[in-house]
Every structure is written in structure tokens, then in C-alpha cells.
Length: 80
Image (cartoon, rainbow, N blue to C red; front, top):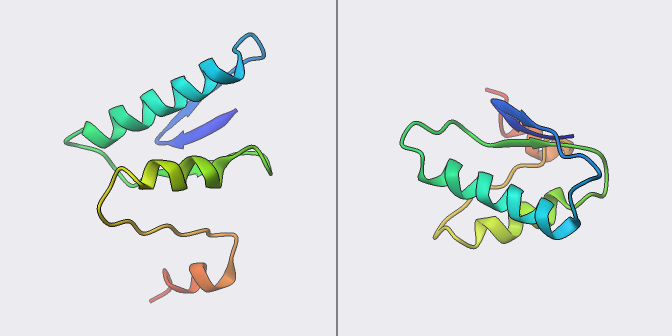
């Protein structure tokens, strides 16, 4: 399962990798165009391509901020 908050999207083994990538990219593009979008949080198992997905998606923006909340330095940015 790949979770995009506030929604969870479950992909089963019946999807090929290409179809899975297209589904995720479609979801991200829909999120980007939404006038009422909320911050994007992506969670999932280790080493399934979350970071690459976000770095590739970030190229569609002029400016981005990527936080990895597994890293203490990034978590400290959110503490007031």
C-alpha cells in the first residue's frame, strides 16, 4: 500500500510496474491541480521509490521543499 494523505491508495499485484507508476503520477497531477489540496505526505515500505517519485515530481514545480521526517534535522524544522 502506498499512502497519500488524506487518502490511501492500495495497488495490488495485478498492476504492472508501468501501470502502477502511471497511476501514482496521475494521482500526483490531480493533487497538484486541486484548488483545495492539502500538504502531501507519502508513506510506504522502505526502498520502493518514494524519494525518486517525489524528486521527479518536484521537477514540475519552480520551487520545492522536501522534508524527510525520518531525519532528525528535518524533524527539528517543524518544532517551534
